Length: 118
Image 1: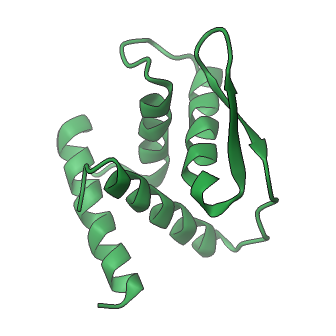
Image 2: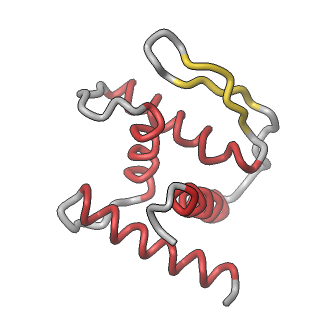
């Protein structure tokens, strides 16, 4: 099976599973899944987040998701438990479609590693 086909299949399985768990079956979009990864990484599940916090959660998620690719490295947790990352390598210029594929691949790999999907 080609890498692209496997990614597409895993992505569809992941979206379906997360959507059932968190969105009453309405399909979650990429940004919503990134947000969920941010909450997972912060570990503060039962808190109400302001708009700025939600952006910070998405930033945490992106850093964590792209860490295995060598773009970011975990640095430390601050006094409030928020993880901080340092940039190891700048992301190459990517077209919108390429960004989407990279993020989907990173998200699928993250959830495979967490044994949420196979």
